[in-house]
Length: 216
Image (cartoon, rainbow, N blue to C red):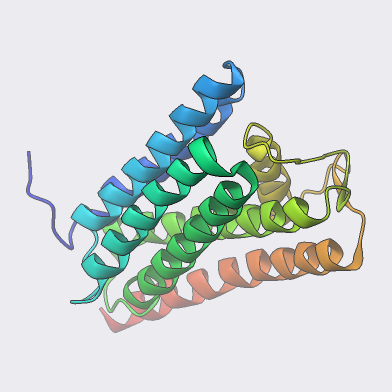
């Protein structure tokens, strides 16, 4: 097996993101306590994969290591002390991680002078991260405004997070089935910003890859 480096690191990270999304769907079918535990473990495992595989400078390991510790603390608080606080903390930690990973990955992928398989997979990873970022934002809004989305209520439960992922990626791709829809100005704003981001991201990726190809 090849050692992990800048030639294949995004491949491992993208696989971990896909596993995170699939596990989220599987956890939804399990008993609430078991499904929640599985989701938390896979999320922390994704953090660990990012810590091991991605090299975004000297501060990256400290950043992810800190989030792992905060994630464990959030899970502990939610499990044994105060569930709403734990839920809020978990979503905030996940949001910070997804934003940090997307920002740093974009610097390597979109500014890459060469078009390689790892760069293309990295672009896919960023797209997955965008959907996760907005799903986390929707989850945070729903913790304070349970009626913020028509067709979905998220009241101190992580088992409905797969529905938020579904809504997020449907919005990101501007597919818009309409079974879940924004019900207040904040979620409407988040939804159209996500749709705009998804559209422009694809255009930016294509332009970046074409530009890199011309310089090769």
